[in-house]
Image (tube, rainbow, N blue to C red; front, side, top):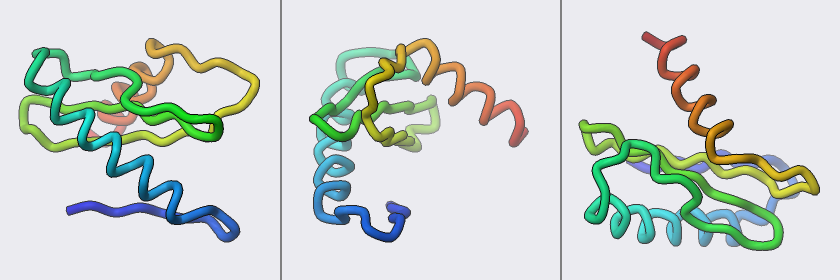
Length: 88
């Protein structure tokens, strides 16, 4: 199951490319590591994609619009964990 949510005026082709490219990188990283948080998977001038893959092998992508502010991997990991805890 794969779903992309688009806002009006967003470039759907570019966002789809980011997501599918990130899934390819995610598959490679899953084979290399046992970590559940895979860090930055894809980055370009406008977006950055982070990945998370728990032991269930369900893949989660978080696509953020790049701004002047740098988002650290630890902050994104905390957002994943806090989202999981709230849903439990």
